[in-house]
Image (cartoon, rainbow, N blue to C red):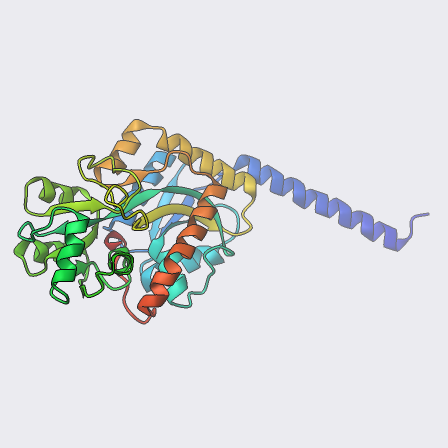
Length: 337
């Protein structure tokens, strides 16, 4: 005789098995509907451009991906939306340094950059460059350091805003070289900074590498002294790196990566990651990113992406703490990193 308690246990096991089976089937069939890519900035910036290129590439690999721009809070509003979404792989965040590094260190966003997200892939980075007005009598970083030390308090550098990677790169440069009397001039985006650099209102700027800046460099309107990368960038192989100029600790870039809510099934995370690697292997897709100053990562993985973000947080935390940056300040837009 089977008693009532045994029957309830039996029914419970059957129900659990049914749920597990449905979950497994859902993972196998993923995606069964369009995927939402949350871009946590307004349309028109670098983040938006990268996200739309990825979404377009996914049509043949995963199916339909629609863009949802959720600007505000230096990217924290959009990131929080994905952290609250169902852990089913249908809401993906296009995360970057402002959202997953600067905001969590400088403020108190409603998410944790590691615990609340499942990393999928790092798409690549956009390096920061040291750019000067041609009238400044320096042609490399050592000459820049020497000039700054010989003219304390007289050399200003522009950035796209307080808390951007350009601003933080300037603080890191000062701490590494002892040229600690540079005057930071924050702008509302990269455009006004580069305009004032060309006109001579500022002598130097730390800005993300992009196509228009490289055109100005090649036409002689500005001079790019170095890119803050370990290796020369694909879009400007003629420009030396900070490592070549004896500043290996001066690496500074914005990164772009894909993140789902923590708890998303590993099989779904791996499916998206594999599709992204396939897109990166496509030369046309890759060249579109390179033309904009983007350095694609061709073989990222969920584990490598998680470690990447952890390393970036560890690397920038002391710089941000030393600056005393608080999230009450405005952090620049995505293209300003």
